[in-house]
Length: 421
View 1: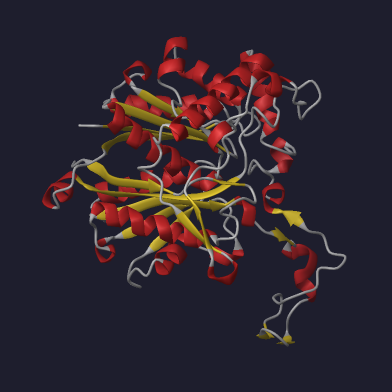
View 2 (view 1 turned 90 degrees about the horizontal axis):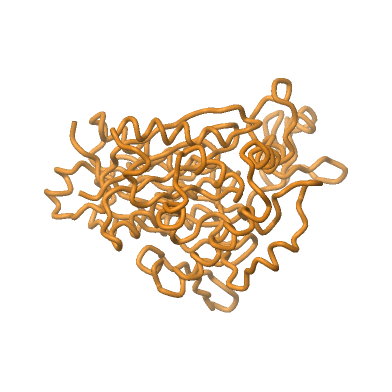
């Protein structure tokens, strides 16, 4: 079976919640990275067999955002696109599905990506509250609306944030009970694995320092596509730097933050943030890359997906990592760089412990340019965001193996091993 290789990898800067990217529709962010990814790979969009995108906040303005983004990028209407949702795992899963499609012979060239605008996620009214009385008549703005559809005033009707209405963890309440936030299982992880508040805060400070150091050194410049934000009177603003990192972070400031739960460990300072952004990579067979004169960034060696009790979730990460490593015939010690998404500092520390990462490797191999606590976590885009950074760091550092892993709502984990050959 022929190798699947990655020939380009780009991302937008990561926008703060309600920050610099929040005025731009998510599919526009996607269009930007799609065009830049194929441009760098010298690939004609007409030759792309499929576009596979991860997104968790699949909002009304961009249903099937893969198709929306490629059309907004002015790609041929014949080019197909599909959007996946495995919660936080979605972006990395898009890379897995693109790889499988190429391995199965159903694509020569595929683009995988992740897109998310958490700032633009809608407040909405669930259909069970209102649909029975809607429609069946001509609406003055939208024309005739079938029964059960239509525009409606919002007075006196319940409004919900999507992430809460989605039950956060994607688990049936009647089986697992109500989990009001992802943080609830992070607190369990801290207790089960003996993670202290000081350890969580110390890792969070390291994350901030690593991300700020990478920005100051210009290490992200080669992977970031600047975003032009239209303004008033024809003026534009350029966003070209990740917004979330906090250069003023300190142990003193982190230690003074109040825990969210009584007697808890998780705070705003040692948890990831909600963010906006997009990323894309181009994949193809090794022979196709050779024919086109392209030098691969890396080869997709293996991947794995695992499930766990959604009230715990974090054990799914080491389980997915073990699947990926076993498939590759490798061990955690073989990995030169490791990206463990920081949903929460306690989750990262718990997962690293279960993965068997040594204390020395934690310092030298894990999240060397920061992660979710410092750079943010635009849910469905994060898996590709972190892969883009991992690939560029692997080539800058000239190392052989890289591993990325993420936990996801509903008790799932995903991991991928890539190799520079």
